[in-house]
Image (cartoon, rainbow, N blue to C red; front, top):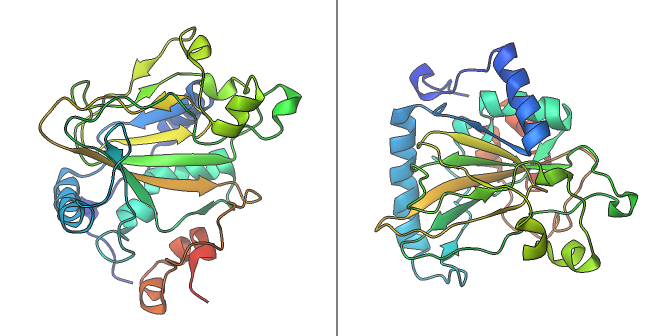
Length: 265
């Protein structure tokens, strides 16, 4: 496998920075690694993504709020090691989910189109055994690669710090993952603004919502989901988008291990 250009890769976190990131993720339910992606890489990836967005997605429907997403093709440049085996990200995941975690392919994205509105407050997954009334360690973590500046004007994500420890209150929340206003209005929120090239790592139980994009430009983040070893997704065998032999052999041994469940058989 060809080694990536050092100027186009993310440096590993120091032990101190790694521990700080893990502490923040545990306490707040998310952590932002600011501007860790090389600027040249972000520029090139954004251009490739926007081209794919225009040719393959422009005629697809978005949600009522104007937020949309699609799965980039499983080929270069979307299988870049910077995305699927980012050094800093893997450090956090190995400590937060255990060294035998695995990732999903194809991954997705979230684009807030110009004029998009505000999403419902929700979490992306529920608690394991909510009847216990307490939050257990995370099973699923989503990693967002910001290809654009995320600002208040273009709909940077609203996040409720610490909400990953709030166990679902009733069956409606458990089944729909939507959080009632009577709950989220009682808790402080922050808008996760960050420059392009930043990475947001979030416990998927954390309350959040996409905000309105009042600018004339789309804003996009890539979204990769990772599971603790024993947490198999319900749709594991439903996807037809597995990695073929050619794409598979281009992966490093480490990437083959992380995405081991998505090889075509």
